[in-house]
Image (tube, rainbow, N blue to C red; front, side, top):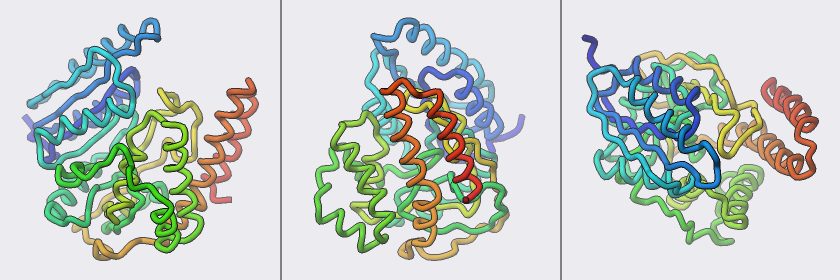
Length: 321
């Protein structure tokens, strides 16, 4: 029987999407983790049939775990929502392990992702500057690489972290004040700061039911770093989900290829400013425009026509035009 190819424990967070969840589990079956944690929020009371769908997802996921593995589950009976459901699942995970990998049900990792996380989690276990390991590099599709850099722009589309870092997480974002906004401009420049501020301001203004904006805030507040692979190791297949129904240029990206030995391109205290500026210009600002337009189109019942326009914009950002 083959042994585990990934050493780190893994948290898998699922909900009501069977097709994408099984794609992630298939990737896990190849990696064969020895410890797997599976968390699922409960069905929403106002969604007819969702209880059956949620139950079917849980049963199918558990049935597919057929390799030697210690499995622990956190299956909620009632729905906590995206913010509290995911946050409490990560709390639960780090109550049991000091470090590990976190995958949601729409991010499919390449085999190299697990190797990358194992190496980075071990290398930076005691480095208080580093808060996360990111598997996604939206500029790294198809890139063969043997190095990594450090950035404040760490994606939670397939990531890893440590208990010591997650304990710093602030769901209230209590320190989001004008002084912090000004500091972002000094650190990153006008466009990246504009993007970051708009994300956090939007969350505060509309009380958006999500958890990841608060993690972004925590990293920015603490001037923390993400380990960033030079190639992309995750593909997001979740075009239609609880909070999104527009395919962006960031969906279905190709994988890069990891070459060893793996080496850092810089020290953690060196911010990859160039990466952030390119990401802001080519990915984040166009994605913000598409997402905002999608919400407006839905309200005006013009979503079909708007989606065709958004796909055109998506293809332009994907080609770099």
